[in-house]
Length: 506
Image (cartoon, rainbow, N blue to C red; front, top):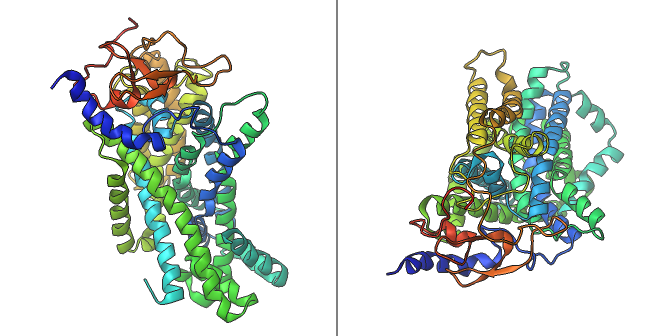
């Protein structure tokens, strides 16, 4: 078997699947035919999920309404600010969060760590949303429209029972506690990795032009970091409804969305209609988000596995892996330890997302030590970049240590500040100390034509891959060490590295 045959076999297998959605590569201009509004609306479709109601309810019943609202607001601001640069890079350069992470301080193999963290996010919330669906099915059938059905109960309570607003605002009123706010924010900040799922849609944004500039920015902001505005509102509504149904169902059941909505539905509609509408709401919401969880999780797992093993097993394998892990969490009754699970997980999610955001905003645009044009292709990047990996590990380890009380009970609630604060300082500091030398292994990919066109959008010029014989656009291609051009996925599955260009700029 020749060198080309050894590389071609896994590459051809992978190429059968990836043109459908460009799983592990740049999303080409020829595929991105939707308008910014369509892409943005598709991305926002995922916010139908109902976990926010449980998260908000859990925080509110534990810490009181005032502390819960401050926690939700603080977390929303942090998520919006850190999500903006990531969403912009995805929409502008048409790559997913893993590919962004590679060139934003982590390196080709360093970002495997963060892919696993994102995959963990998808199966945790896959299990959470699945549990909520199971609660709805159990309630409606005795077995273990969505926007209208969410808004209607809220409007009814505010109009028909104004006292419910007063009870909501007064619940648990023991004064504002910074520790309580931070504990609540830690739970909300576990949703920071949701930006990865938004990006899985935003990478299909069309090129930004003078004609679509306003629509492009509106869709990018609203469907990117803007998702958290809707999320924060749902969390606050979750607190409101949990307080309303608390006396009727008890504290344990009050955090379940199915109990919240049926408790209000019973007040203004016929009894025979309550259960069917609750079932429709829960099932529609959960199906929408869990399709995204399955899709995004399989992308993350496949990306990591393919880079490490140089093999492409297909995304279906990892859809099943995600499903299996989620089922284990569901059987373990994750609702009973939901806040603790999310608080722990959030430390790692924050460390990752803030590190990438700091690299883009500070190292690329202020210090100019990180290349502004994102790079993700094998051979162009160092295996590991100490800037991102060092910042991520330091902030994760320290924030988790604070979370478990290793530095004393007094600062234990403040682990979110550690997870957010350290990357903001350490990411640029490490870039300065290393002088940015670990970002690019090469600055020349061996192809004369620039990656970006005159408008700064990824070029649409086509090149044929010498391995899989498929044509891909310029940003996905590099020169092969054996001659011709090779696509990024075939390069990833080149087990012996025969096609990888040598170091340097030659």
